[in-house]
Every structure is written in C-alpha cells, then in structure tokens.
Length: 123
View 1: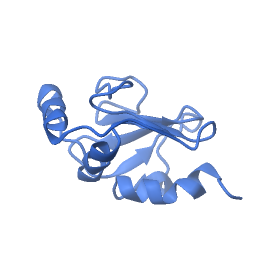
View 2 (view 1 turned 120 degrees about the vertical axis):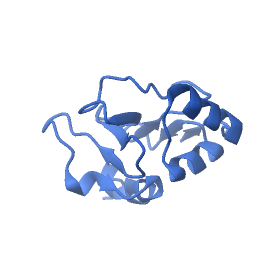
View 3 (view 1 turned 90 degrees about the horizontal axis):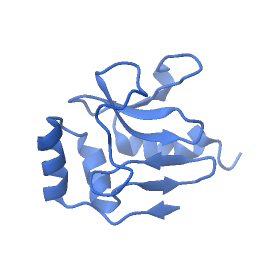
View 4 (view 1 turned 90 degrees about the vertical axis):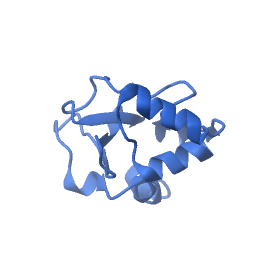
C-alpha cells in the first residue's frame, strides 16, 4: 500500500471551487487522511487526489458521460466514479459499457469496506 500525505480542508475547498464541483463527503474525509494512493496493488485500486499526482481530472474521458467524475481506477482499468453533486461511488465496467447496480456504493467508505470482495482478496 502506498499513501500520500492528507490534503488540507483548504486544498480540498480550493479544488472544488476551481472546478465548480462538490466532492462526496466521505471521499473528502479520506483525502484528509490520504490525498490519493495505491491500495492492494498489483490487483488493487489507485485513488486520485486534489494536491498530489495523480490529481483528479474532472474532464477525464474514461467515464460513461459527463455526469460523472473519475476519482480512481481499478488495476483492470475500470474507473472509480462519483456522480456530480452526489455521494454514491460506482465502478464503470468497460467490458459491459455500464455501471452494474452491484458496483454502486452509498458512499466512499462503503466502497472501502467492500474492497476485499471487489478485488477478490483472500479468496
């Protein structure tokens, strides 16, 4: 696992203001702990931050449409998203070109709690 230092509330607020978005509350909490990082690689997930590279690119094309913002990616290449102004986190499956209902999480912490199952760790 590799974690960056946390972002400050001021850095997060400046990012939101600059890009005219509101990040999910639980993701903002996470960013204050670790502003991006890598979990369970090589088969894991990379998360993007607001102050350390890779920085969240609000215009990244790797998403189903412009209602979503990419905040990370699974090792498979499937992006981790949130719907603008929402709290839910989802995984966009490139292969099926869809977001499976089972891969929609109520908040960022729910995604973190499901990582072992999502990534097939410990099976």
